[in-house]
Image (cartoon, rainbow, N blue to C red):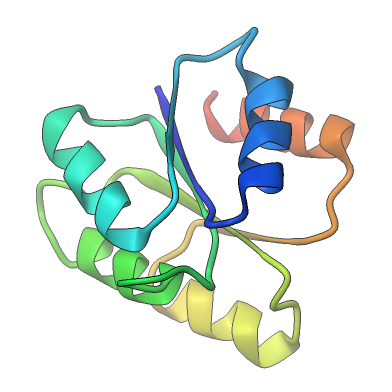
Length: 117
């Protein structure tokens, strides 16, 4: 199962269309929504936007990676924040991958498939 977290409805819908044929999905629009979803069902991967309400993606990633129960979940940050410092911050907080927007849907699908191998 993949949790996709983004506060932009258009991005959530695009990601749903890319992945729903191949994976079970849970779509959420907030950082808190990610944490709530993880409590209910452990995902194989989280595609995590950085700029979200309540808790941003960096905060969510840090919480997940500092918890022994969730530290092994693959977290891929998916963000328009593509400066080197943004990417480094995400990776330092424990993100396994950092993908910048805009993304190529075919390439993203391949990347996710590789991450889940």
